[in-house]
Image 1 (spheres, rainbow, N blue to C red):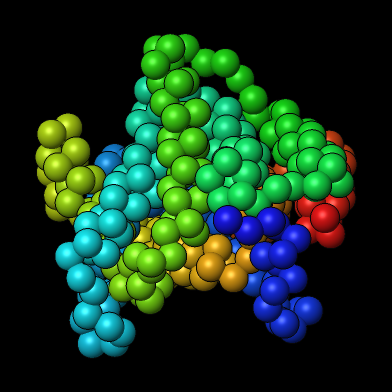
Image 2: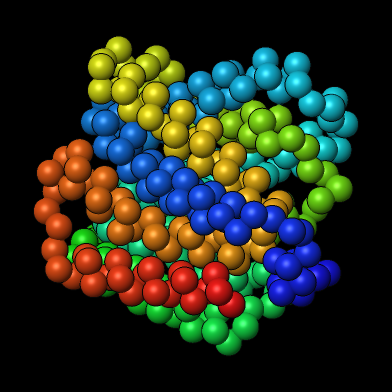
Length: 299
């Protein structure tokens, strides 16, 4: 186990490497909203997630077979486990909660508290301890997220288990993140691991879509195709690859703190592409979130 300060100082990396990776990670993470916005009008959530993960896995498969070491059965099974946690349970849990009428704003807020859960798990699982300044930055960033999300929050009329499902889905992804960083002996190249994750998710989402009576045939519409292209190329390939690469290079709490910037960047996507309004509260929340993330990174 290593202390967070030792982990971040050990490699001699270019000072701009992390800011560039963090900016790309935030853009990719928040862009998932765009693909969902295009595709969700055309298909059920499980059918949408089935095609997102299937296309991602099939595109990666020839590269996973041709490039990189041949993984052993133990490593493959381990990556399949991460696929169940980080793809099927995480994405599927939130999708099912929305389908059960948990308000989208509340689901998004709980999802964006992921860095807080990772920070809490990093010390007992990885031995990465946060300083007082980093905890202060985390508190400020959470406040900023709450301010940005305030207008879209609501309680809704979903069954009680659906609300618990949103929290459980977020905690599962947080646990998968710290376990993925901690089990270095089972690491494989990112493109191979992501291929296994997405194909595992595709098999499970396909079974859910069939069980729900939605079938597996994709809607042959322009919006669905556009949404799939966005979700596969940006929200899956770019975002997951960056996230797993960053987890190997930097402390988990530092990497996850960038996700706090996802809600304000998402509002900019919505304004630019769908003409959704921007409010003074959103900019205030953005400023708070930036200040909190800056404190967390400096710590």
